[in-house]
Image (cartoon, rainbow, N blue to C red; front, side):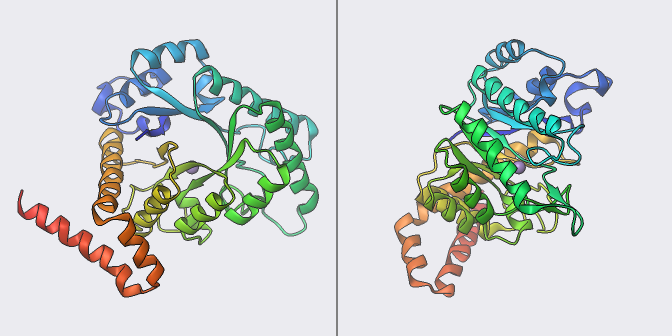
Amino acid sequence: MKFSTRLNSFKTQPENFFGSIDQKSLSVFDYISRMATVDGLTHVELNYPEHFEHTTVEEVKRFLTEKQLHVSGIALRFKNHYTFGEYANQDSQIRNKAIKETMEAIEVCNELGGEVTTIWLANDGFDYAFQMDYEKAYNKIVDALKQITSSYPENKISFEYKPYQPRAFSLIGNISTTLMLLEEVGSQNMGVTLDFCHMLMTKENPAYSLALAARKNRLMGFHLNDGHKDNDDGLMLGSVHFMQTLEFIYYAKRYNYNGLIYFDTFPLREDPVKECEQNIKMYKALDAFLDRFGLEKIEEIIQSGDALEAQKLLYIFTQQQTLSTNTL
Ligand SMILES: [Mn+2]
């Protein structure tokens, strides 16, 4: 399995790894060094342009090889000029800059051997009634993605939706709007990245969103984490929605998902190395439980439509854990 995570998580509790050094002096390389100590982590994800502001792509490439880490992909981070939107921005200069930055990110992803470039449009949305011409804005996003995907037909480009934050409403905020968007863009090299917290925020059941994406052959990436639904909490895998996480992993297996398993968590008060290791261990434990229980047996439960049968999964998981704890 390929496990990846975000570099910015590794800025927490710097003293645990870097000692008493002034954090301002730390670089992308220092954080990659810290990531390299995570047991089981195979890949890292980098933000563009954020992580390339003080270094060259070549330097990053060399350093990652040295640390025996791969790049899972590049994530777009639209900052500074984009308060009023990216691809739907009314200012054509800013809009063109967003399109250009996306293309640059795809090229960086290629140079680093990454699998997928992920687009999250933080600011393409609205806060007030009568603030936006919805159709015009939507069309601008379709047009921008057509330009981008047709310029890089060999590259995987994925769209990560989020219903709100920082805007009150995102233009593309749920699985249905995203799949409609991808249909209109019409490029086969484009897919969807499912962020667990974002799905919860828009009151989706994550496994259902996964099934819809797979049904349209658009499943391209996972951002796993957990939360209490209203915010992008970025908590540890399975900590709040245990059964929904188990169901999500089951559907990933059912659809033979073999992409990257990326943890988009925010260990703000936890040691990020230990937190990441816990996420990897939990994913593997849930995956192994599904195999042990038997995928066919789970399929039978689903087909029965019986909630009491479904609850047995939780009961048996708990029992197995109790048995193994007793033998410790
Ligand atoms: Mn995410």
